Each structure stands twice: as C-alpha cells, then as structure tokens.
Amino acid sequence: MIKLLIFDLDGTLADTGQDITHALNYALEPFGVRKYSLEETKAMVGSGISKLLESLIPGDSPVAEEMRNNNGQKPEDLVLSRFLEYYDNHLIDNTEAYPQVKETLAKLHGFKKTVLSNKREIYSKRVLEGLDILQYFDLVWGSDSVREKKPSPVPVLDMMQYFQVSKSETLLIGDSNFDVEAGKSAGIKVVAVTYGFRSREYLTKADEVIDNFEQLIEVIPRI
Image 1 (cartoon, rainbow, N blue to C red):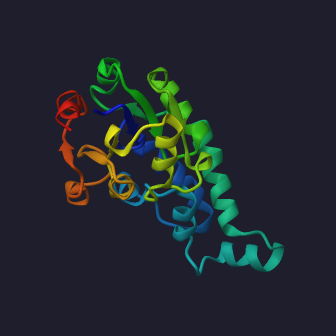
Image 2: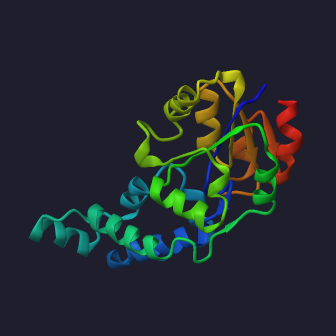
C-alpha cells in the first residue's frame, strides 16, 4: 500500500517554464547570447540551473574573457547572480498550477505528500505558496536541502528514511527522465506525466504514464 507520494515541481505541479525562460535570458544578456525560446528552455532544464547557465556562456565571449583577465571575476558567478536576481522578483509572474492539480491534491487523503525539486527550497516553497497549494504538502526539499540532486536516488531514499516508509510504500510523480531515473534507481514505482517539460519518449521507463494530473486518483490504487 502506498503511503508516501513524492512530487516533482517544475513541469509536474506547476508550469514554471515562462518565468524560468525570462530569467535565463536576462542572466545571459551581458554575454551576447541569443534569446532562448520557452520550448528550448523546457528541454534544457531539470538537473539544476547553475550548471545549465554555465554551459550556455560562450567560450569566446568578450565579456567573459575580460572578466577573467582583468578582475578575476568568474562569468559563471555573474550569470547565476543575474538569474537569481531576476527570478527572485518574477517568480510567479506567468507561473500557474497545471489543470486539476489543486483539486486532486485536496482529494489525496491518507498519504504523506512531499515535493522533491531541483529548484532551490525557498523558491520551491514560494511557488507552491503563490499557487495556494503549499498547505497540501508535509515536506518540501529543494536542490540546496539534499545531499545529491535528481537523477540521483539519494534524495528519494533520504525522504523515505525521513518518513520511515519502504520502497513498496513510496511513489514518485514527475515529468522528466531525471524523475524517472531517480525513482527507478531508488527501487520505487514512478508515475510520469506527459504535459510537462519532457515528451513521452523520455518517460518510457515509468511504471505508469498519465496525460492529466487527475488520473492519479485512478492510478494510485492500481499501483
């Protein structure tokens, strides 16, 4: 019997893509990088923003080279600080809960419900609070509150240990290959949603694949 439901945030509970895209483009602006589209951003994010931003700074950027040569400042520090500066002030400008998320969470009685996100914990909580769904969760962990980030199984196992539940009593719900890999590596069942940041082809190893969050009501008893 399932006792613990572990939810991903971005792409699973909330459509955060547009605000992340705006923050990413603002962060990269000094380096002369082209603007990334919403779909491009959704395809790139998932494993943590710091490494992603660093990877998008062009190696031949005059600004980056000048920073390294003249004042020793790291371009990756600047791009991250700009991202956080923007995102902190525009966290939920365009962010919304996916259809039926709030209604379904309200119906999921008798479970411990948690959020495990690769977004920082404070931002995860602020998004959930801003969408008026924070109250449905017993625990929220972000990238800075875990020993390792998804796709590592470590944060999943740590969360199971926290609630003293077994593998057969735990279910992870997410939208990406990072979620599926984390859950399967931890030895638990995984439900993948198709409406998030990854297409169905990335979700083939999930135990169940759903197209609407409300389908969890039917899927959980079956699992």
